[in-house]
Length: 508
Image 1 (cartoon, rainbow, N blue to C red):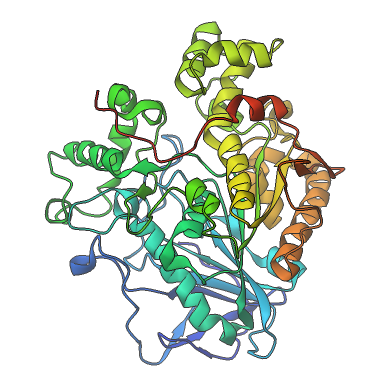
Image 2: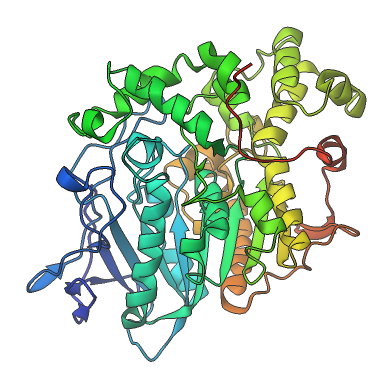
């Protein structure tokens, strides 16, 4: 949990939970660590979020709340240090906490494979976004991993999504006091955060809580209830337990992520039951349980579930190169690995032949990257835009093509590169992807991206035409942005007959 250096306090603000006090920071009023629900521990462990109990007096809201229990990003990057049980807290950046101002509101949902993430990450500092856009920005923590997404008997499914609904409900009930307009809320997120946005668009309990949405790199991994239950059995089995509230409640919340990490290291052993997801390193995704999430987002949007919500959706050109770098695979992929990836992740009866025909000059490593970029992020994002249009709604499509300058440009326009561009934060992840020599170029592009995002949050217009399936207008985010026909036509054709839906449990 990071403390924040700030100046004098600002006037106290009354919320439904009690009075809070923030601080002035660089022209903004900033509030951190405000509870939006009761800590989900003790008798509330694995339960749906409960409304926060009122506190007495004034609560100083100067520091972020503690991160939820989680797995590390990788063995080389440790998980955040536990700091308490108030995992469910919100943070607000506002130009002026005056109820009369009624500024647009943007609410961020972090990514992290549904197994890690915390808003005290410097990459998510919302100061620049709020200042430049003259709007209110909210971030919040929600449960991840086993606590948030494992399918546990005796507990509601998708508790992490229910936390998000609770945070958005807090925004609706409280944001006016911070100078925001509860009728002008845009929810935005990246990776698992974008998958969460897609789920919220399909969830009856989230309806009416936001007017607009931005989904950056939507993952196609939603689980059927049967698959989620089978994976939860394996997760609990790592501890010699059953996937029930009674068994798992006895385990320290900060020890549970170890079970996920252990299973993640040997997921491939379950390929005959879990299919392609077994060849990834995460055991979590939203479950299409029929209640919290009645149907997968693509079907829900095609049926018109979100036709009243204006949408930006898109992806990065070279999504999977980040994961190749993290796995030490850049420059190491030969024909055997490429053939296995094409067989596992590609669409149709003979995806290897189809990809090699569509990309005849692509070397093995490029095919390996392409099919996994397409399966995991690019085609799910495109198909979700098409589903929104089919359901009578409006979607604006983009592709980020600017290559991350660090490492000689080897990562290309990789996964997560959009985060520093949206927030204008160039330390941490942004610094690693961009490097010090190209900050001016990155900052100029970031200004363009932030302007598009905040214009959309304010007016519904990001500055380029809405998507349609005849002309396929797509905004190319680069140093010289332009609008053109969707550029990944070869991949689009390969996947045009594929139906993204909840991934099944293989029982034959």
